Amino acid sequence: FTRLSGADRTVGFDCPLRRAWFHETARAGYADSHHADSLRRLGEVLGLGWVEGPPPVSGEARAKAAALLAGAGIGEGEPLVVVAPGGRDDLERVDKRWPADRFAALVKALAADGVRVVVTGSADETALCGRVSGGHAENLAGKTGCEDLAALFARCRLVVGNNSGPVHLASSLGIPTLSFSGGVHLVQWKPLGSAAQILLLDERCAETICRTCPDKGSACLEPIGMDRVGAEARRILA
Image 1 (cartoon, one colour):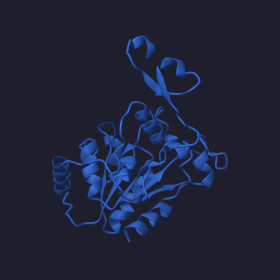
Image 2: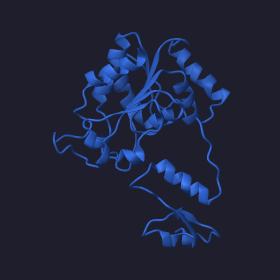
Image 3: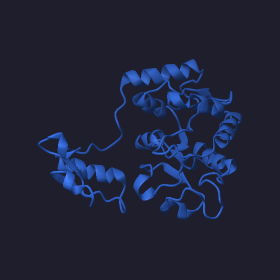
Image 4: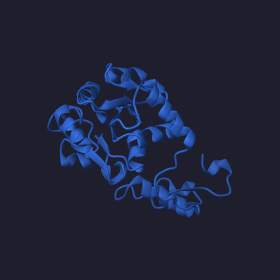
């Protein structure tokens, strides 16, 4: 389709089965570098610059986030944790998500510690976020766009979620994150940022794309217990 488009200039990644589609190519580097670096190289071929630092957040988005939190009775200085239990991927694979009941237990435990918690997700994830919030947190699923979410993250002390868009966004803002990752190669797809922490069952999990744990015979993230996650969250919040 790229060649058939009739465009005067087409640019893509230099992969054996694809390079003939494009006028110009950039090295993909899938095996040895983060996907963000591959996109940077693609931009360089196009003559595009690279903006360092966190993405900008408008005053309008900050005001909306403040209104959502105020509506939930969450004050400016209260310790806040955002939980993002969803996340889409190519096959809606549940093995790439920490179980919803573990997220719910974490939310309940943090609330018992006096931490205010909000649960976020897309409109399609409203029911999931409702189960996770369980009356112990505010369910904001479907109420925030990307920039609103960034403004919400700017108010919190920790974001906990799967290896998904919200966690990557929070990490880019320099917000501490705890995330779970299964079935992906972390060299290519890990959240970037000095405050990003990824919880793995085993160090080997960082270099595998297995859908089922060969040792446990279960989905990759299922054996990661709530006690371990709760302890890490409390350490960050201390």
